Image 1 (cartoon, rainbow over the protein chains, first blue to last red):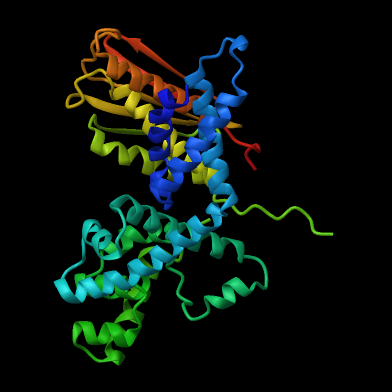
Image 2 (tube, each protein chain N blue to C red):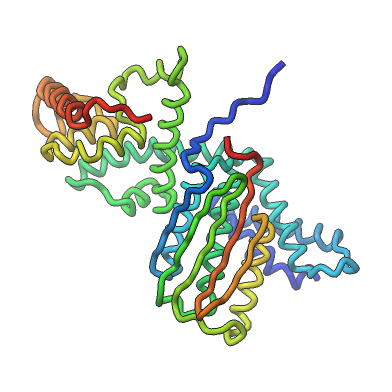
Length: 221
Length: 147
């Protein structure tokens, strides 16, 4: 019964492969679970063994991840990848002279395109949450963000800003992107577009003012 | 005494909201279904483990809808419906799917595995065939109701 179903254990282990554990570990967990399910299987209940074993093996695979503190590690990994993407993007912009594609970012960071997209999405999510959570209190979270007092971080802000941004000239748009999405300092932007830091500062201030007027001082709920 | 830690979740989709996603019925695009599913799951307050269950489950759902049909034709249509205590996802393959049973044995085995995986990951699931299209669906309940 065990040898007949080793293939099943393998296939199920593979389904959990994208979570950062080596395949052999997962196969090991799944195989042990298969043995357990043989021990526990009660034919008189009229349940199909494969269905019973699948349930047991998936249960054990999930427990394996839970026991290893996977949720915490996974969210940390996503956050790390998100930060890594920021650096990788700046480097690739310099190297390629254009914005990198998701495939290029995946190659440079050694992850999959899906992971890159997840990290981008989740990274924005974390920021939105941290800002929301600090809304009405004297919260160290908001203090930590003190440096970036212009609030363009959340998805909601950006959704509101998108049409207003589209009205800005290309150069101003790229400066805003470098500053608020890639997180470059004014000096770094100055170097990359070949003007003085003071000039970047003025352009930023003017662009921000224009944005404020374009969106009519609205703030998202 | 330490109370229950406060749950911080970005619940921006609420009961009655629906999201649709349609894409060409190809295996390499199932990533779209997974990405959208996890984004939605996060917005209805699923925790990260439930979210991973859903990602895995929605992949199987797409497989079920794709299996046994000419996977290079037609579209996969995903419908996400948010209700008070659960998320429903249905996946319809509008392509010309041959009737069940006409496929090979391997396909039937793969279908069975997908269904068994779904049984282990979600609360309810099923598959129907009507007018030449295949519709697979699942329901995943949340541990707690909408805030």
